[in-house]
Image (cartoon, rainbow, N blue to C red):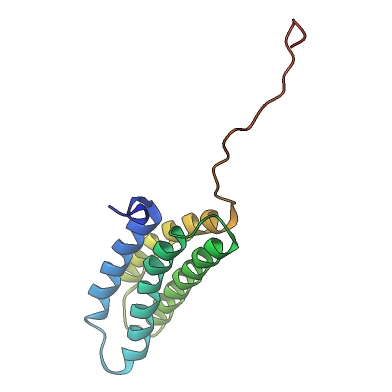
Length: 131
């Protein structure tokens, strides 16, 4: 198992890709542009999470998580467009958006914190013996 496969954000994003593929199988004709956009942006989420997770803690790592975050938000907007145009019903759209809310909340955290492990930190303290 790769390290990125252990991340909940990655696993939920794979679940979302599965959901998006199932939805997109039914989108044809005039809806094909939104379908293609949803397919691309949904795939971008786990791909960027995996690539970012493979980087050492750095601005570059955060950049990949931010790209994944942007793709998740793009998916949410695409679902809104599909619902507004009545290509999908609200229940279907809300099912996908529930997954996206989970993904977005994790990616916000992943892209904003400095995820590094610090070893050898010494703490100063005083005790009653003056040590």
